[in-house]
Length: 238
Image (cartoon, rainbow, N blue to C red):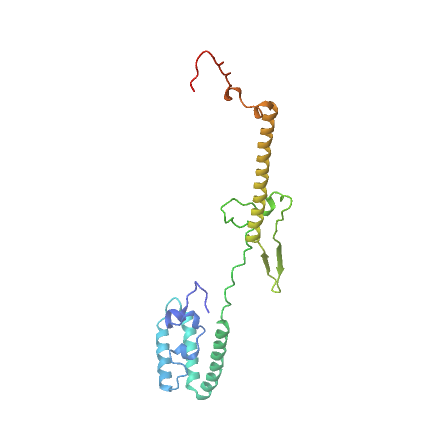
């Protein structure tokens, strides 16, 4: 493996990428894996050597000579049956180990975790009658004789270490029933106060003018006129 900015003779001269380095004998000679024909192996080695010799007089002559030595060693190994059999066995084991490592690296990723649960809002439910509602903490004290049901907050810790918060909100039906009871009591109190005010006004008017309610007005009663005396000298018709 060469540095990122350094000259890479394998890639530049032989077309061997950094992922394939260091190359095996077959890749170095440009052969198919486990090629068995000696003529093909010999011709491939000669072609590689002739190509690399063209760079011996250039700037990278030392690299050219090093690759020539590697090509010659690979050609000698693959043309010897005993050495080739031993090398093929070692190469087969290395390829199997590489495949096992790649399979282990391609582990199925864990499923995405669901987003954390958000606790429900503590705001009271909307009034079905469309009237503004207050939160339980800011409600006025209930009137005498009425009861108000309040909710409770329950917090549970599960075994996985996560906290699940469950809030039991106020029951809509119970809340509405309590408001209706308070409304009926309020209306009854208003009616009683109104009747009391009317009674007090009537009593006050009676006390200020006691005769106005017992004796009728004088101008409404007709006065009886005395009868004219009968004149006996005038003959009366019969």
